[in-house]
Image (cartoon, rainbow, N blue to C red; front, side, top):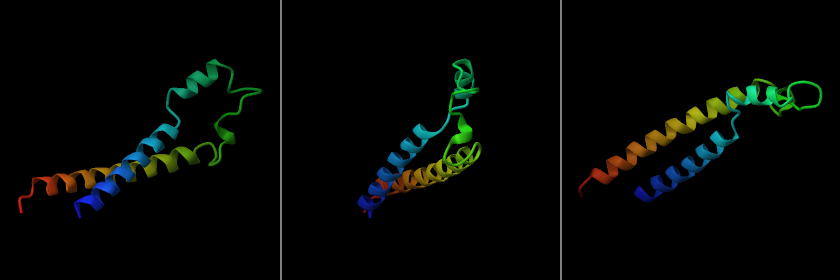
Amino acid sequence: MDTLILAIHMVISVLLVGLILIQHGKGADAGAAALGGGGGGGGGASSSLFGSQGSASFLSRTSAILAMLFFISSLTLAYFAGRTD
């Protein structure tokens, strides 16, 4: 049982790190505007796969769910580690 929860915990942590790295940061808009990405030739966020706001909402919600599962699996692993049989 411990090994299964540990494997799930590791998969969740890798997915969470990857999902956070994919997300668009709040300061990235200012950097894109300063480099000329917002106007004529730059591909802004409106041409993304999920639309201009769809990806932020989807990625935020998915990362929140993964974070919740990460904390639950962490607490479960802590419970099993503290048990004495």
